[in-house]
Amino acid sequence: MTNDRIIQLGHLYRENLLSDVVPFWQAHSPDREYGGFFTFLDRTGRRYGEDKPIWLQGRAAWMFATLYRLVEPRPEWLALARHGCEFLDRYAVDASGKLFFCVTREGRPLRMRRYVFSEVFAGLAFAGMAAATGEEWALRRAQALHRSFVRYLRTPGLIPPKTDPRTRPMKSLSPLMCLLYFSDALREVDREGSYEEVIDACVEEILRDFVKRDEDCVLETVGPAGEHLEGPDGRAMNPGHVIECAWFMLEVARRRRDPTLSAKAALLVDIALRRGWDERFGGLFYWIDVEGRPATQLEHDMKLWWPHNEALIALLLAYEATGESRYADWFEKMHAWTWAHFPDRECGEWFGYLHRDGSVSTPLKGGLWKGMFHVPRCLLLCWQTLMRLSTRAGPAGGP
Image 1 (cartoon, one colour):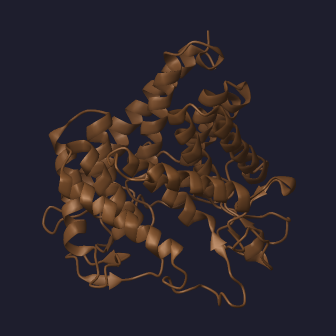
Image 2 (cartoon, helix red, strand yellow; image 1 turned 180 degrees about the vertical axis):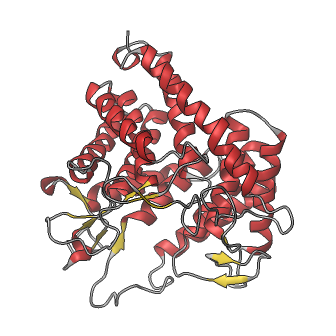
Image 3 (tube, one colour; image 1 turned 30 degrees about the horizontal axis):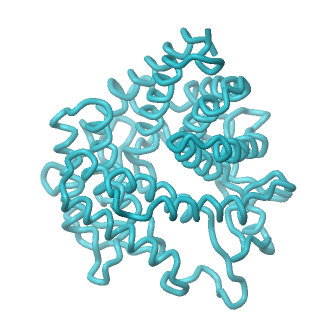
């Protein structure tokens, strides 16, 4: 990848972030009357629902705080970050201390899930606010949500089990991945916490129990000590989660200047691409059965926005860490497919859900699962990585 190409790509990612994606959400998402953000937005940004998923409130608030801190201190971005955090502070927490999954437009309780991902993204929002402003109240909220997430994750029986643990005990990859990312974000603003130890424990557990190198896969669900589980659940792999794990580790390795961890994380990228890339139509499958048996998830062969966002980040970070041209080549391949299918050049922002062949399944821009997060985070982190690559000497910087 030449330096001219790196600079060209950097301009593209920056322009799409600041002139397209962020303006779309800034114009259509804030609820100026009741607080928080609308996420049920159609192709043009018009609302088709008014309920407010808590985890997407946190994601949007974090994104605006991060833009303020890393791109430009625009007062309107900080105001929107505060707007989201205040809604979370007012309406997200149940009397038991657990966070709702979804509330009404006015903030009335609507849905509680047994999972605790709302805690992660509300915590990220408050951590982002603390990083942007230094305000102590935001840091305290983030610390409390981190403690709550760890407690739910590590206390057996506190979360109602999906299956009877006496018959089939199991654990999943995604909570560990979230704990790793949440801990690394909070570490930036809370120098007194023991987040490095939590990060190390997450990395060790993921690599030890979920990565099966001899089978060239990373499982989504395993037994307590990494045992294989019976049936489709025990053979399921989500390439997007694997790639997301990989770039979280690559970022930790970059910060620590740890080439050993970089190599281990890059291995996860390799596995996800070998297993997840659709050789017929291009793009990444959403789920696969690692033994080639029928996948039971009805959406298994769809192409969703967020795994492709994560792959773009991971490939650039792997290239930066290793200097290996194959990651640059894979980035170009992923970039070409992603940018040919997801960005909506007529109405702005990106489509989220495609059929296997890359045609649009539904034109919505936001909903219960898609909000202001994966696309702008991808554009921002790719832009930042390309900027670093453009100023660096050596093979990854080009001639």
